[in-house]
Length: 171
Image (cartoon, rainbow, N blue to C red; front, side):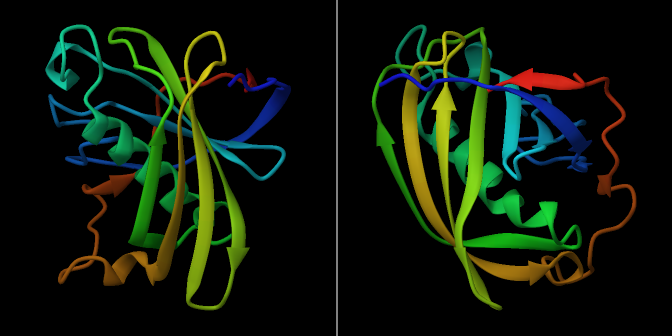
């Protein structure tokens, strides 16, 4: 399955955290993902895997793929509500192709439906040539960021991503 990409404006860059496996700036095992809010209301995670993320030689572990897809769909709600996060209720992933290590990968996610307490989303994991390597659907509980941990999120745990990012992205 191939995804037909479009060139889209990047409207904003979402915050990252210190130790998250998917975006953690200080976690040496992190995917170091950037989360780009796109003009069409979708969210794109851009990241690169390394040897420590492998399962079979040269292939990304399915759990790593699931984690980044889950994180990306769960963040879609922040496009409209920056202080709300999605807490996973259910995640379903279909693996279509092996995902190679050491290349830039993208997860494109969007909201399917939403109520005051719950939202559903979908995502595609795209290889460099826009081949769809995995698909996910998920359901999330809307949760204010300060309610995620017992102590809330301190400024040194959740902060602006200051890395450069593209003004436009082909996804």
